[in-house]
Image (tube, rainbow, N blue to C red; front, side, top):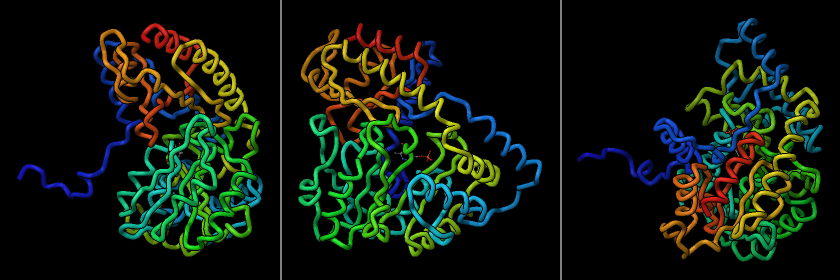
Length: 395
Ligand SMILES: *Cc1c(COP(=O)(O)O)cnc(C)c1O
């Protein structure tokens, strides 16, 4: 037998965003000038005051194993942050620090899902949700949304998707990839549906909380008293603090879930990196105003890219309210030929852009929406201008 791997890993689909980034790197190595708009990664450096805290931690010999669920000082900083920014009250037993929000999500899936449990995902959803759920024995149930509803799920859609096997609902707001933000009122309507189904837990992924362009205020599901005991609030520092490589994420959750995640980490990772944890204490305790220059910059780029996309026939966009992606509907190209290449679906289109415009984007299929592509605008204005001019030329 040539393949001695487990069924589990053979079934797992590689991350489409990371794969696209790898393809772009390959083409670059072959001498092509590829502009990468596929990865969700700020092009800023980690702020100086956070880097200083990390240097100090090295000097202070923070080199031992940390508590599995995170340094107490970091948990207290997270508690302060949740109170200050979200009006949420957690105690130390409800906080778990992990190696990135991605691991936080994986932990939660591992400790909450049994074989065959259904997890409702709002499409388009963040690329890894469905595979993390499947890897944990769960069954993703995709609720489609479209440009017309700003990619938001209606309460009726939720009601229709619920079955006796529904165990969880996962969503991100601000949403990666659509940039949509659920208002307090919209979340309340979803909570009202969930009231009739007390077995359903909610994962609220709030990692783009601070990257908000001021139209809809950030709201947390756990802030509703009747949802607090059923909601896992996931967050992290990767996006807002330009700390993708530092790998720190965290949850606030009912303590029985936090304890279970702690137990899992104790057998799997022994906890997150010591220096990164010390740096994140500073990141969270300092005022969020200190990162606003990055948010302002993303806002300028959003305006730039929406303007340029509007000049290209066949791209239909919503106006993202947060995060740093646009998710244009490009289904008008399906069935057509571009420079002799037949475009059957969003994957063909993304591949066409990579090969004919040297611009890396990601197919909407990876996010559970077959009509779109995701374009990241966490890139310089020159890069955005050049990329969009190449795309215009190519289509
Ligand atoms: C980037 C991202 C994550 C993962 O964050 P890390 O802390 O880098 O693991 C989780 N959810 C969403 C919606 C993201 O965009």
